[in-house]
Length: 375
Image 1: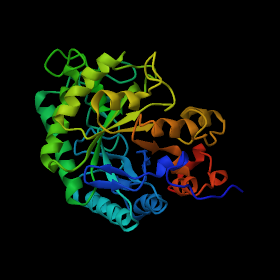
Image 2: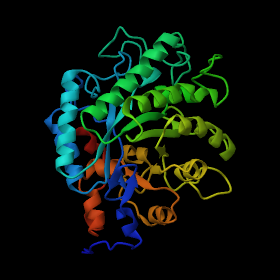
Image 3: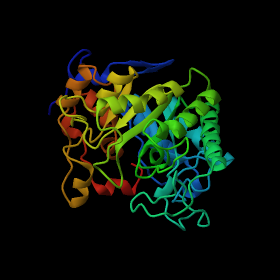
C-alpha cells in the first residue's frame, strides 16, 4: 500500500497549499462542487443534510459549495425535495448546516439557483406556475412555454437573489455562489438560443449579461464589499454540450467585463472535462482563459478525480479515479486557483483526506448508485 503524507511544495501538494479569498483563508485548493441531491423534503434541509456536508469538512475540503438552493420565486423549482433558501424553516435548517460545517473547521457557501424554463409546465410543487425565462422558450426544444419575463418579474427575481444573499450572510455562510451555468435562468439570458429579446436585456452578448449583472450588483449591495460572490458559468448547456457563448477569447473578454464590474470575486468555470483546451491554439482550459482575461481567481471543474466523462458511468462503464498529474501541472502553473471536485466527493466524503495522505488506492470510484443516498 502506498501510504505517505503529501509534503508542502510537492507536485501533488499544490492541491493542499492555502489560498486567501478576500478575508477568507482556505486551508487548501479543494472545493466541493455543488451537486443537486434532493434530500430536503418540503424544501427544508434536515440533520442528515448537515451531517453530509460536515463529513466533507471533517475530511479536509477547503471550501464547500452547497447543492443548488432555490431563491424565493414560485417558478424556481421543479422538485419539492430540492432545498429552499427562503422561509423560516428552510433557513433555520441551513443555519444548522453552517454550524456543523464550521464546528468541523470548514467553510461553506450556498449556491443560489433558479432553473428558469428548464422547469416543465405543471411541475410540482407549484403546478399552477408556468416556467419563466428571458423569452419564455423551452430550453431543449425552443418551443414557447410562456411570455417573455416582464420588467416587473425581472425586478422581482433580482430582489429575490439579493434577499437570499443577505440571508446567507445573516445566518453565517462564508459567501455565496450564483448559478449562472448549464442552461438555467441566468444562463438562459446569456445564451442567444434562449434569449431573443430586443430590449436592453437582449441582443448582442454584452447586452445579454445585463440580467446577471443586475443580480450580482444587487447581491453586492445586500452583503457589502467583503462578502465573497462567486459566479458559476459554462459554455455548455444541459441540452447542448457543444454550445458556446463565446467563440474566441475576444468574445469571452467582452462577456466577462460587465460581470467583473458588477462585483464578481471568483469565477467558477464549469467544463465537462477540465483537461480540454477551451480555444484552438492554446492549452488553457476555460478557467485558465477566464483568469487570464479578468485577473480574478478561478475554480476549475469537470470530471476531476474521474477517468472519463459523467455519462460513461450511466452506460454501465466504471468511471474509476483519475490520475491527478494534469490537474496539478495546471494548478502549479497558476492557470487557475481552486479545483472543484464533484462526483468523486459525492461518493467518497474522505476523498480530500485520502489524496492528502497518499491513500490513492483507497479512493472509491463513482457509480450511479451513489446518487441514491447521502453518504
